[in-house]
Image (cartoon, rainbow, N blue to C red):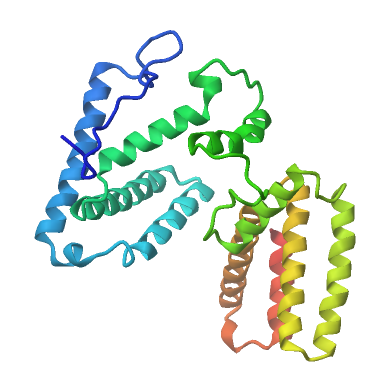
Length: 289
């Protein structure tokens, strides 16, 4: 069947269904099962669009919040190491992909098979060390060549800016991490984490000045600089700021719930406690965790 844009899908030059020795990656039974179940999902989505009033009225824009919500539910399941929940949440996330593709097929833009063909072709092109003759021994070598692979597949010359390939619309904390990494690739980076700590102390001083001046615009600007510096400290320490902050958030919530439980065990209403009493509970919980 022709895709909506009248471009015939093409098989990838490399047979990705086989390993380097030419052996099938899945047996014939699994191959049939995967095809059947994915096709069933695609067909189900089409029936929902034709038969359910709610599904029929959805647009790419109205579904954005669900794409984001399902992404974070996948992350939550991974962080909790709840693999049964992950199985369920991955299904919800894949549904959003199929939902978006079905809407675009109705509009004559592209179909799910175009999406699948595109991602296979893209990954083959970005992994010449797997599907070609290039030799890259370590993960850092792959990462170092990633932007070059992306430019080549788009037929682009080297970008005029190191940030030309920066993805737009990222969460701000993740964006600051990627900005720092890209700048570091061309040598614009602190020598070590201690240098970043010095920068953070400098930024804290500027934040204090902004608050002393009671200048709201300056306060926001300096707070942003402080957040950016902290993000880069996390990066220089070898962590990802998004993941690091999510862990801190989870720890705070866990300890707060423990405070509420402790207050209840003592026969006290946590919401009625003053700040000193709450802090005493907080310190008690911290000693236990």
